[in-house]
Length: 168
View 1 (cartoon, rainbow, N blue to C red):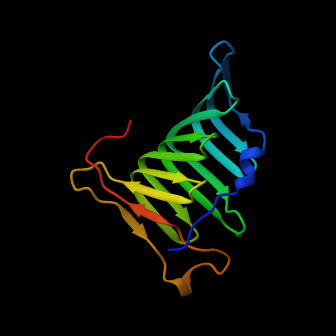
View 2: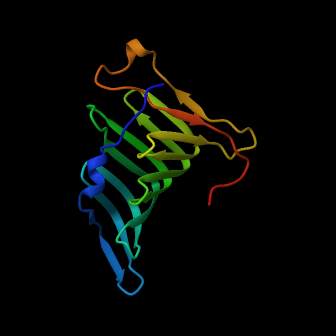
């Protein structure tokens, strides 16, 4: 299957956050945003009930968003259209450009969609990995026939796997 690409230029843009409440611990480089939180970085948008952002010594940020569900949206690189994802917890690492969706995870691109308990989207490698933690070990995917896909982009590149361990 063809590959989905995130808007790679987003990683070089500033991160903007809005919330009802904010607490900052400068010594530990931890910021906690609560209440209708929206994180925006270029074309990437994450909406959540709460986002915790930790900055490392190199200035890279790791964000953990929680919600019922939290949501993610980002424009595709060199294509029209967006990648959208949902989960009870979303973790974003600005250094690796890896986004993890946990708990009733779902990722959509055009009319293609994958579901599982844990989905990893690696923007650098341009790969989705879908895992199930249930005893049945099932993931779900809807991949449209090529002639029904949007003419502006390509389908998801999916690497389905199963695991019987629970995500962190």
